[in-house]
Amino acid sequence: MRVSLAHPRELGAPELNRWRALQEAHAGFDNPFLSPEFTLTVGELRDLVRVAVIYDGADIVGFFPFERHPLGIGKPVAAGLTDAQGLVHAKDVEIDPHRLLRLCGLSVYEFDHLVAGQPMLAARHESHPSPIIDLRDGYETYTAFLREHSGKTYKTTLAKQRKLERDAGEIRHDYATSRVEPLHTLIGWKAEQYRRTGRTDRFAHRWIVELVERLQATDTEHFAGVLDMVYAGDVPIAGHFGLRTRTTLVGWFPAYDTAYAKYSPGLIHHLAMAERAAESGIQVIDMGRGQKEYKDKLKNGEYEVAEGRVATVGPAAGVHWLMRVPVRKTRATVLANPVLHRTADRVLKTFGRLRTALQS
Image 1 (spheres, rainbow, N blue to C red):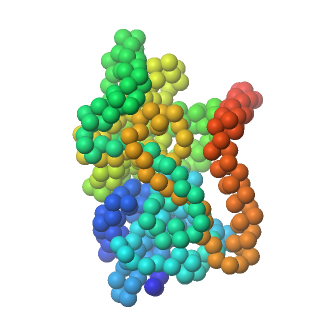
Image 2 (cartoon, rainbow, N blue to C red; image 1 turned 30 degrees about the vertical axis):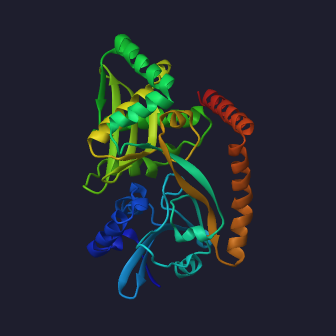
Image 3 (cartoon, rainbow, N blue to C red; image 1 turned 135 degrees about the vertical axis):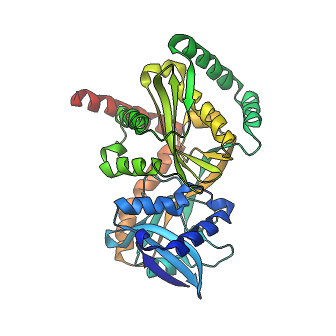
């Protein structure tokens, strides 16, 4: 195994075409976060992004995109934002993860959404479900599943949609729009949601706003940013920004106007999005790891992603373990315990309300 390190902008057409070919040859890599376009766009905004081009002899057999942080700590590209992480590599190729780290100048690589079938899974890790909406048999088959397994939710959502139309105007869905104004509306809703629930506002970072804007402007056969909005009359009430490959759409930033909360606009939007996505050739909507009530109501399948780290022997890896591993295990314990999870969620929401009040 030989590795050549490059900034994403240094990759030429042969490398990018090979990356796409490897990605499309393996169903497990069919996720836009693993696409070269995503790494290229993040690399335009974050200079710490690198790509390890992996060779077997003269042949390129893999690509390993990562961010290199101080002390040789490696993280996924746009760590904290991505719902699919790892290498894109040829089938049956043998890659020693520890040797790969050394060749990349890394002491540790940590991950929290590593996709299945990765060499990095030789390390200790924890697996987590990532709910999906499986549309491979069509939207009608999906809604038949909902009627059977989530019948009350499905019927109630349709009833609320009819009431919303009576109260506010005809429901209109603008799928895959290139307009920037609704994107900024969605970002405003999402930022307010982060603050309201006590979470960190990701959109307080200008580079994340610019990343989303650049991705929305990207539209190719292999990869695109997808913004879709639901309107009642001429008023936007809910929306989502995500990314797609030819056949997979990832859930990324869903949000809605809380003034319409009683109508369940998020569920109305997700059903509309699933229908239009299926019409456009999308076979799977990956809603991403995380326990959310709406995901439980809408899912008809699951993938698995892993959380953990690969480390070499050395002081930097030891410092990283002390700083990160106990915190990760504590968080996993809280999330796995319904009582602790509800308590933590209430504390965060209380903090969010206090923070909002103080800012006002």
